[in-house]
Image (cartoon, rainbow, N blue to C red; front, side, top):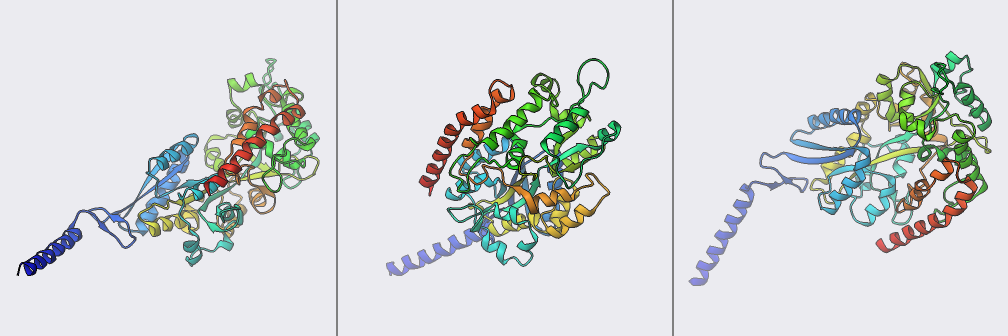
Length: 453
């Protein structure tokens, strides 16, 4: 009798527990996550960017929420120079956003640390995603098979591809009576210097130069000059630093000579008075890099015409530059994997999401057919948008540290290069001096990756 009562009591307790679970504040939804009391499914999306990017993504997120009733996406926006630090803090604190930007150089370590959700099955089974219509460079930047980046599983979809093109002030050329640069044939280094010298002027007669040819940042343009001269930062295996070659040293010296020999770029003192980006914006530079993410700002801020052309070519005779990219990934720990991957699809591969971002003038389309239409539109600057597509399809390259475990080896080069730019050390001296330390950092990165597997 006592056993019967005990069994009945246990059954009643079980029923009560089940009922209380069903009627509780939070409940599991069909995606496996915890739904809030009102049934809303909440995702966090963390990215970096300025005002234009934030406005563009807000519009896209609003549209996504409208298409997915009961879904709420919280945007977490940071400045570009704070993003990596804040993301790592979130990871360390076990507060990884559901969806977030990831750079190609972070893929290896984040995969080994089980931070990223493998998106391969979702991407390949989604009938709305046509990988053949998405830039291969973008998708491959986020593939990793555990050993080699560029092959294997997909751990993010490209937010964009960013061809880093060379812009020129068309209005300045026309005022000076100079022939406009060829949009297809790159200038030689000698011709580039000659044109820059013609456009470096004291325009107001006060004895001070106030219009310069160039205003390049070494961190973002040296790659172009090195590659077009036949040099590189790494060998094909990406295990050996190769900056100590004549081709590399020649390119670095040529860059330093822009200021110290040819005087076609502002001095360090001049740049402190007004940085080169602001000089370009004010129409005081003939040449300056123009990437797709600049277009929205340039539409409203520039009072001169500009266009884009290939970078000048070194001894190979061919122009070279890099393609930037950021990926949008899903946290392995997300409560809503299906919903989070749907958001990634909407932002990276849907026509509607892409159109919202492209209309905001912050990127070129990820979708190839959309990109062709975008490039053919001559109603907005730059007129030669086709140059961006040629960089992505034909000759653009990944930044040197994109496919290594970390970038310490690469950063070391730029952290210590100032004596060359100041003319206190030759490029040949510097590359021989810096190569062993860079190799040491790279070897350490390779060892760290081996230990993390």
